[in-house]
Length: 537
Image 1: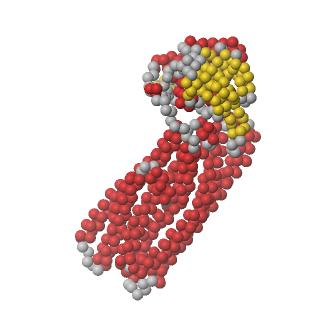
Image 2: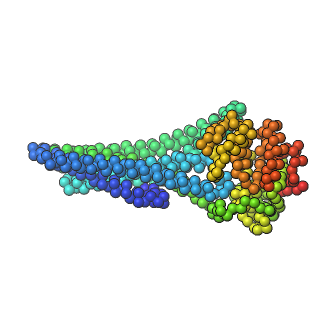
Image 3: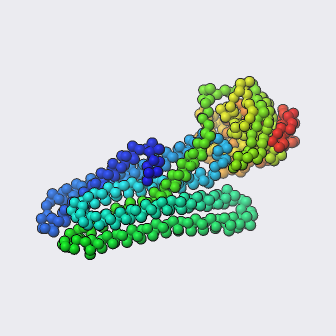
């Protein structure tokens, strides 16, 4: 419970939480008062002394309870959803500020599970705990009334319920590690399902791979999750049975063992109050599994936030008003980057690399697989921080992370956005013209500042990404194997028309390519091998 409250307070919603708790306190007191008035009216009726004022006051209290209860529930729902929203926006902001290496080290399925299932568990726990809090208020009120009217019976009920509370606290500590293990196993299961969706084509082609993934991973992981969830739910079920037993023992004690010298009417009044009280106490007990699951989820959510915050670089200090639109020379001197394993040991090194980029120049970057081309592109775009080396823009030393706005890249695995984000002024006619030029006008349309359809082939997706890059009008363009999925017509257009056009506009163009038949069109050709530049001609 403490971690849930701390999570809400950390989200800046402590005053909303306080407001909801006040509403629950008022509605709980109203409910308890209604119980006391019912009990009082029952005594008057038994004595044939009904007073109309009792009915009027009961109606007013009931209306107050209903109004407060309705408002409390609505505010509790609002609070639970605002907590989830605050966290998701926080993570989105952290992802925006994170560097590529951090994102690459995080498991995609783990992030999605934490943002969806774990966040939802926290939302459920907020609502359940607030209902439990209201139940606590009602229980306190009713217990107080019972102590005032029937002190002996009240202490019997308190003893049995105190035992139940102690039992739940013990079980809660015991099942916490199991709840954590169940959540981790479910995350792995989601990872298996991700293979089915992301690798659908490969699995459809290779039946042996498909069967192996099902038999050795999906079924095994699914059985593990099922067994652990049965075990976890079984523990809470056993506790629920024990609590039910304590409840019936409490009623039996009042009926058969305690207050034998009092009239049956009083005993039945006490039993009726205990029956009413039990429903409220059960809400408290029922909230415990949700709170336990929420504590695990909160720990996982906070772990994700810490992972994103580790080594977090400050946001780009260069505001749009300070961004430069042109440069004379961008020089990379002795850049070095190391890949490391989980133990921090170096596994592969790119560099030292020295390279000069100038406007109005077409530079081809070639080399075999594993030669370091993609890593060099990530260094040039500021996505990877160099371990050593200097970057100079017009002889002034800079951080490429603060100047990557200069670059419009299309990576080999480029993500395709559904709109031209970041462009305030858009010429709709030019977008339509470019769609026709790239033979995409029949596939997708520019409508309401959105592309209507992104369900395109790989080559078509690359052409739509090219349209977006051209419209960005950046000083530097980087194309990573853009022409690899294009037909001969668009391949020729790319090398023979588009690149020279960008060059004529004063753009610096870097092309990662293996198309040797078009090498003659380059101003310079950089050849890489084993993470180093072998030739610059």
